[in-house]
Length: 200
Ligand code: SF4
Ligand code: SF4
Image 1: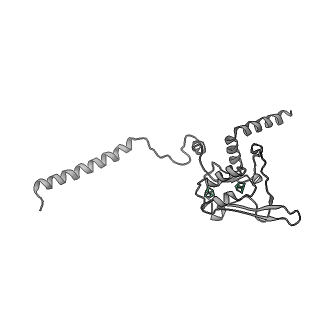
Image 2: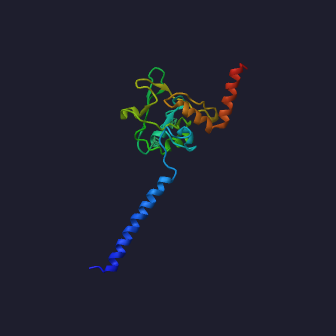
Image 3: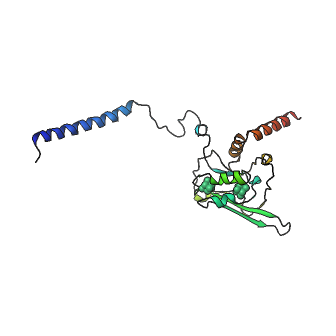
């Protein structure tokens, strides 16, 4: 059996705790909210507020892919599938499949590093992140149309001459990013575009 003083002390502590909790709750009524409604109440487009090295959906600039499979081999969750076939007429290897199952991707960036280090930089993260789709299959990005094939890109010795491709569902994003990451190439392409405009 507890003493009267202990009983009073318990009641007092309970009351104090309740008021402390309410004080915290009410103090939040007067604070600026930390969370904001997405996407309609942001002061700037969300894409502009992403960190510079944000890893969004992957993009493959398929016209500069040599099908070396570095990306496929390094992917820890096997979400990249690269397949080739040999054209019996020309004896050339052709790329017949380049799929990325983005629903499995954990955006680790290993494939991007592998391609940048040993190949052409064809695979990149874009700043795209809004991926709501009706079916899981729609999250498989197919960079070679099923049933079709394309020639393999032969990597030049001077990698600064690798062109920036424009093929793929997020190509514009990837292209902008590629240009941001490669200032000399960006400057060169800008000069070329200006020359083409003036017809010089
Ligand atoms: S590492 Fe690059 S060049 Fe090689 S298959 Fe992958 S995307 Fe293509
Ligand atoms: S980012 Fe990582 S998980 Fe996603 S495809 Fe590349 S290696 Fe695989």
